Amino acid sequence: MRETRDDEDGGFAVPAIGGGVFGADTAGSPGSIAPPFPFVSLLLAFVFLVPMNFLVQAYGSSVLDERTNRRGEPLLVTPLSPVDIVAGKTLPYAGLAVLVTVAIAAAVGGGPLSVIAVLPIVATFLAATFVGAMFARSFKELTFVTVGVSVLLTTYAFVPAVFTNVTPVALVSPLTLVVFDLQGEAVSAGEVLFATTPMAVGAALLFGLGLG
Image 1 (tube, rainbow, N blue to C red):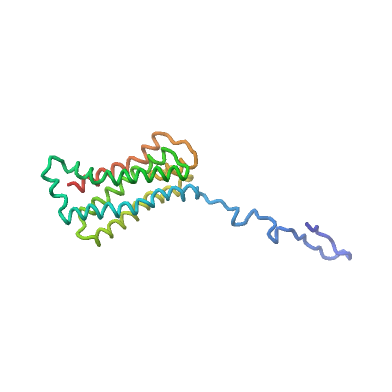
Image 2: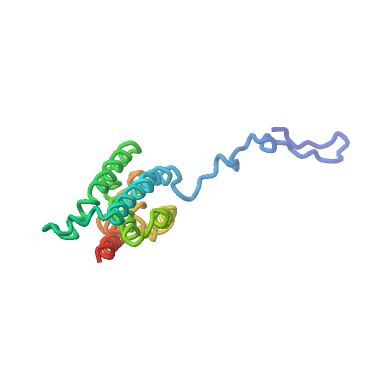
């Protein structure tokens, strides 16, 4: 750094010119700014939601196809209850979602907590799509419903998780548990119940509405 020096005649002082003016001091550079949320963990947690948007499209189309073409009517004369019929239709898709979730968790470094946290999200996606398929009159209407379901539930799951390091209110979303798991933070049983119960109850109510 060039030091401040006086003019030989005792006149003006020349100010010191440091390397910081030309970028040597990078303390305030954009690369050194850390976001107030776990960006990488959030990005990895969002990966869990992506397959569900495709899964509900297939599930909803299958339910609507059986309803409009009356392929499920023969099952109504069997001893099977409506709950059994819907469960038989839904469980293969739920099982596929669980397998995909486990694979993603293994790929991104998540553990059992990540899988447990995603289960109520899967159930709610399927339940909301089931209700939409039961009331939709055409595949065009169903597409509108499934897109709406995907946007609303993805927003509900993802936005609170952005505030994981800011406020406990972030636990209203099960995806926050995934962020905690990816960060290696401990989570209590009460926090797990608080995060997963609302969506699990909501999924049960939606399936009940569709069956009614």
